[in-house]
Length: 246
Image 1 (cartoon, rainbow, N blue to C red):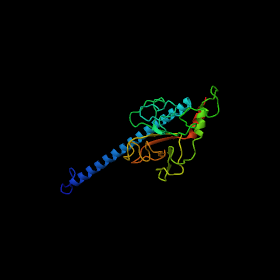
Image 2 (cartoon, helix red, strand yellow; image 1 turned 30 degrees about the vertical axis):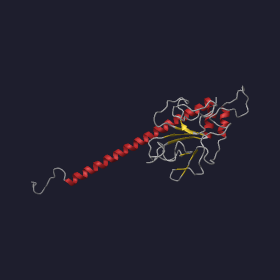
Image 3 (tube, one colour; image 1 turned 90 degrees about the horizontal axis):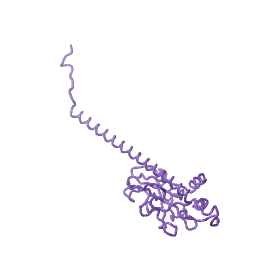
């Protein structure tokens, strides 16, 4: 026979035990919140990266069809800003992606920034020009070879800050605008997500709609940086165009 005196059963929690349980539940709730928040950030990051690739592909096909790159959209109306003389309305290299020109529906929020390397005539890749000596009326007059000719003249190394350029990287992956491995792009795309550093509007880090230095595309996603940077080098674009010449 078991004595009721020798065995004591607990019914319910003590205040200390209850406090411990509530604390544990609170910690688990916070962990769940941060886990889902991180997943949302990664999902948004991947979606923006996919969007940038769509814009890059549209720009490639634009060059294939028009034998030049489009001017940036400087006034956010979705169109490239080109003056009657054929040049870009502003002698500037950074604006927004000209969605209508490249056959895409414009975004209302977080528009894609678009930067294009521009040079003095006759090597401005945003202008359709004859660069290989063909006469008007000849089959190769102002053809894709002329666009490739202009792309091939973009310098391989950065000298000064007259043009947009891609930053080098530090050991931790952060962008270094003074690094010697910086490079000029044929064009670059930046999609902002959340303004994480509270500077430069939606853009984070060194990225700005007025600065020449563009963050490296391999800069990692951090608490204060989540921009997507997609770079098209001159050689990459030349290779793509050469592959797609009919």
